Length: 70
Image 1 (cartoon, rainbow, N blue to C red):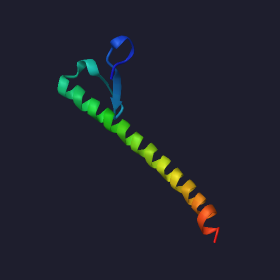
Image 2: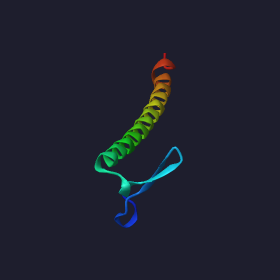
Image 3: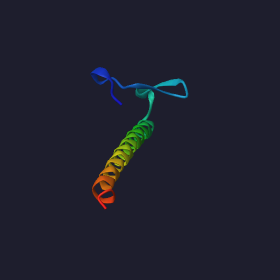
């Protein structure tokens, strides 16, 4: 949540800008948790995409090396 030179970041929710310097500790923690959840969700989506691509490639190899070899 920190910006340049240690300044706290500003962010928007529903087109309203908030300054984290004006928030209390509980509010900052909730924002931090929300940002972490967003990152973890993006990581999970990327991992799923990688797994799908790997499954497709493994399926192609299986077809080449096992199914079509009969």
